[in-house]
Image (cartoon, rainbow, N blue to C red; front, side, top):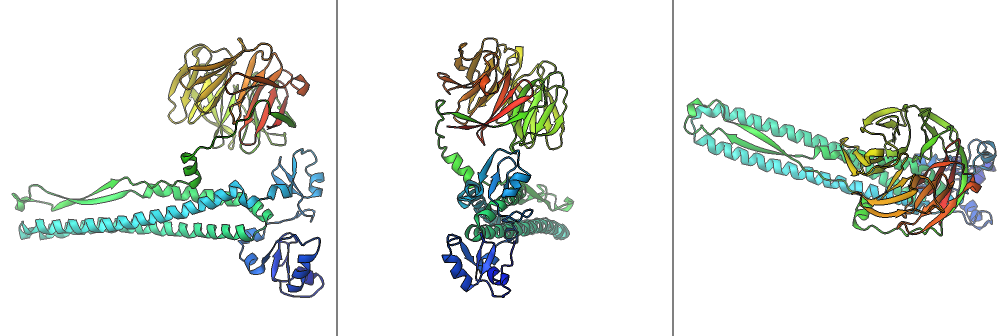
Length: 560
């Protein structure tokens, strides 16, 4: 917070101390009654939103402390750099972002941020978490009542049995009752301890909820935007914690097992019985409203016609390689390139295009991001291994020996689908490493594959074909047109199911309609293509990454 909210900033500048009654986030200062009136009619500030000073004071401290102007140059933020995902003042653009090419007006970025999907999802998640906590509390309370009833039944049964046997079993009765009480007391103690943890988390979540509501009503758009990522991280951490509650929700059923020889051989019985605790699974799933809505109604995304697709060059990238055979875009905007031969390494570039780091698995053909900071890298002809590489730790996490050469690779749910050359099209489970065959027929070397919904699309370089099948390998359509596409290699699919294909010998990028019936050339040598090899479509940002075999790659914005 740049100013002292308790005193009027204008009066303070004139060396007059007057208490502020409202706060203007755009001016970043408090205003007294007199200055508030002038502020509301002044041409430069009449459109500014103000909030009562008491409401502003109730905002979370971290929101109040969000800097709304550049600390380095002491100027207001005016621009948002999409490459570095940060706000900039005019001097920042010149001094630190001179090479960046993707800027937007900060007002356009923060406009309607409180009605954005991300902000609304936080609100829904907080509601879901509070509701879930209430369900967990109710379940534990019911469990305590059930255990109490079980305890009463067991004690009654003990007394009934005790009346039928000799008085010399009094000691055994006492021992068994003590055992029951110990077991149940331990269960009650564990449950109460768990409830204390649940209630503490409930308190934390309600505080998050209260802060969220205050931000929603009283924080500026810029404050909301700048604190949004921290809020998402905090809520995600708390959400992960409460989902772990399921591990502690099993019901323990107490009963009594009476020794069957008691009635006939009372004098020889060494024990009165034993307390049996049976655990009955009782998971209370934590389901977020957005997940329930997705499951209940899948609203179709309007199809993107290939006639309306437009590519706009965002930047050119040095791939630091002389034989790029695979590429992908990570969730944080970094780009990954695989160099097949002779280096066999994986290069990760920052969003600005500079090199971040390299990993050298020994062989590297194609690459796909599988989540949790893990990429899967195939080996091509030189090895039967698929490497799972941790890009956070910059090391190989796991190696899968699939028993064949492996070229193009794609992710489908929890399976990796890969081109196994002579052994056809195969998949391997990331859960248990089990493998199966989708297509038995031989695939040509350097075949690439992608999935869309429940279909598989792969290329055949020698016949210049692009083939679409279902998940069982049954062909749905095949595209072949030598006048427009020769020697197809890399392949990608957008959110509408349009298929983007590299033509190496035709030196172009062609888009094919989802039914395989129509096509259109999007890029050619005039766009910088020179022996193009691979491409990747980022479904989140709608960007297309196209890589030549040597040195150059190009990032395009895709619009329709």
